[in-house]
Image 1 (cartoon, one colour):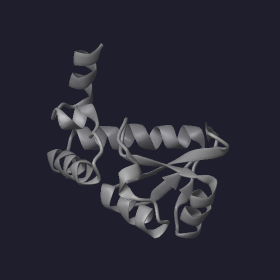
Image 2: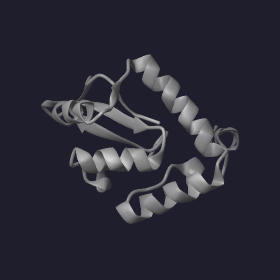
Image 3: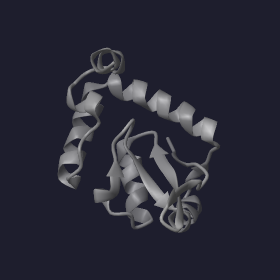
Image 4: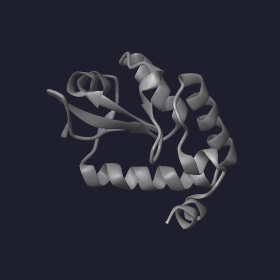
Length: 123
C-alpha cells in the first residue's frame, strides 16, 4: 500500500499543483497529516485525493510517497475507483470522512452506486 503523487502541472494562481492519492483512505489521510495538509482540502471526485503544492509534494516524497507519471496516476485512479465501487465498507468510510471534513462525498459513493450504475444514471 502506497501514496502516489504526479507532476505539478495544474496551475492555481501562481502555484503549480499536483494530485496525491493512496491505495487506502487511511494512508491518504495519514500522509496529509504528515505533510500538514488539513483534511478540509480533501477532494472527492473521481476518487478521494488532495491537490497539493510543489512544496507539499516535496515533503510527501521525503515522507515516502511514490512519484508517478500522468498515465500511472490515471491507472491508479481507475483501479482505486473500481475497488471503492465494489467495497461497501470503503464507501461508508469515505462518506464518514467526507462528512467529518465538511466536503461532499463522490456521487457514486454517496448514492451507494457502483461506477457502471453511476455512469448510466448520469449520461
